[in-house]
Amino acid sequence: MLPRPVRLLHGSVTPLFCLLVLLVTLPPGAPTCPMLCTCYFSPPTPGTFRHLPALEELDLGDNRNLRSLDPDTFRGLERLQSLHLYRCQLSNLPTTLFRSLFSLQYLYLQENNLLYLQDDLFVDLANLSHLFLHGNKIRVLSEHVFRGLWGLDRLLLHVNRLHSVHRWAFRDLAKLTILYLFNNSLATLPGETLAELPSLEFLRLNNNPWACDCRARSLWAWFERARVSSSAVACTTPPERQGHDLRHLSQADFRDCPPANHAPARPAGGTKPKWGGEAEAGRPRSNSSSNHLYGLGEGGAPPADPSSFYRDLPASDIRSPKYDSPTEVDYWAGYGSEEGRLKEGCAGPGCSPLDSGACRPGILPAALPPLLLLLLGPPRL
Image (cartoon, rainbow, N blue to C red; front, side, top):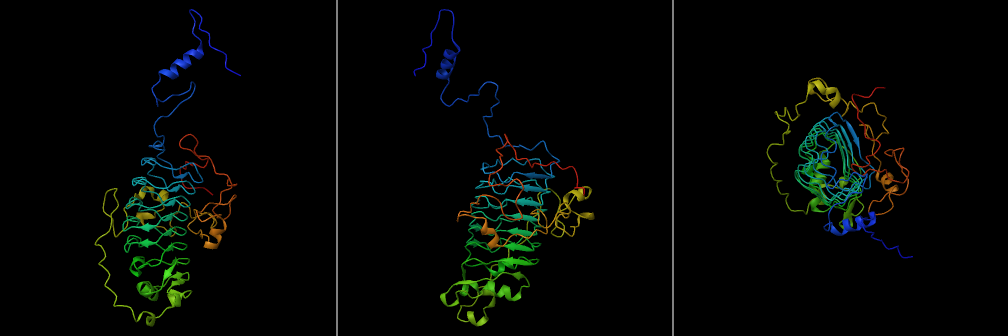
């Protein structure tokens, strides 16, 4: 059925005619906004939370529509302690995204599409204790990728595509106790790299294609000296050692190898926190008047737990320092393909009661997730 023609009567102009004239005269690509609506024609995320200086926990996780973040998105959140960006569609992170988040202790970036981590991405996060990066597509760890993470206790990098780790990638992580690198593509890992982790207690390297030839000698030598709880390190090559545990090889297995080259000298010095003042004995200077908020004891000494703010949480809560991450068997049980797509529903201790196979809404800033919490002090029991 054809639309009725518009009649132009002498001395009158119909609203439809006005609309047609307006559409014709607008230049191509000109922004328009319907009546009774508010439109935003520029990216909506710069400084989104700048008026929330007391914010201590921000949950933007489980947001499949969140694909990018502006470098200034978290500007002004200097009291933020916990930031959830897990299970979104982030493929890269601006270099300055986490700048000035001096109080941050928990950072959840798992199950995104991250392809790489640039140098100095975390340089201002000296108080960070937990960094979750598992379930991404990261291939390489560069020399300065973890620079500045003096207080890091737990680093989860499993279920990525790592095939190369720089010799000095972990040199600022003197307090790290847990490192997960299983389910990656690592064939070699220099023993000198792990020697930079004097506090390491739990290490998982299983489900990697380990080459147990002469390239494995420094890693084997590190295991001979180290006292850590470790997973098996099953050899993939050469064929005669396939299935053997690299940790249980002997010096005789390397007798035909050329003399070991001396490792290059460790780069002198380290990094210092950027918020002014000197680092004292490798530890960032703290604000003693806010120690109860930032998980620090009197005089800036660290508490027994990585965060006093969360120490009363049950061990099943993913934010708890006592939380035990699932094994690779548990982890893969929730996946439906090599790309890491989750099956419908939610399984595992990290699930939210809101998880039911559908993602929570959260396009910034029109519909922020419901779990944006403004905490004015420590939780009360």
